[in-house]
Length: 371
Image (cartoon, rainbow, N blue to C red):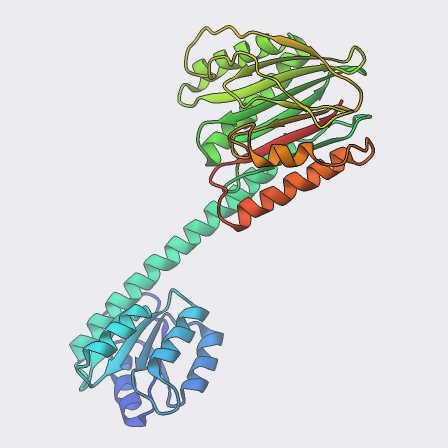
């Protein structure tokens, strides 16, 4: 006899009351409590309340097909193990039931050993699924918390100029990240990074890189090339398992200059104020961070104008500057008051398209800043 510390209730649904009573006696003799219904609708109503771990279900019932009841049970509680009762050696019935996720078959007339074996298998697999569900719930809870913590590291400062930024992870936590630091009234520092891979590990490294970058900018240097060199050392020495692409951009709003340096990251783009022209910041791309210990990065300086819009993004959003989205952004109305808002709306619409069409296979991030 099966020996379980906890004896769950077993549900029986069969239109034949004699079959139900016989099966009830056998199940009770194994130390379980069984409840049966000869009306499948009543049985389903009861199951919806109790979510029994194992259900014995007749294949052929006049009021409702056993296969229909099976599908309804699985839609209510997918973990429940459904043992189909049949007196027919019907291969098609077997195939159809298995297709709809039946767990086993019990042939009439019943044998105690068959009932015992089927119950044992059903409860064992139910418990495996239940433990897996609990584990998955705990993981998802931790991932949601990690995502919340990560989002707190990417708050935008209060600027007099309009700015939009967003990160869309593939799954809760993103390897993409950005950081915008207000150096003084006239200068802003932007870092956008893309840690190799996805998920929690990449997200934790992204948080570390953000923290290191913020501290360096506060205490050591705001030069983009030097910041990338220091981040490279940190990633190489402290982590040693993940690479990272990045763009570091120092904006002097008063002098109308941008100084930038890249480490394998996509080219930033300037959308010009008075034309539909764009300026792609095509400097020599530096070495990806975290691969070599001692790497130096070059800097490029360009002049900008009031009303220009800076666009920094990851390759999860755009793989190329010739992407149709870039053309769409350049064709938007050039009204200074509305342009950056329209650009952000256009980008968000495109991101929604990627997400709803399941085309988003990488983390997505971007920054739009009115210069």
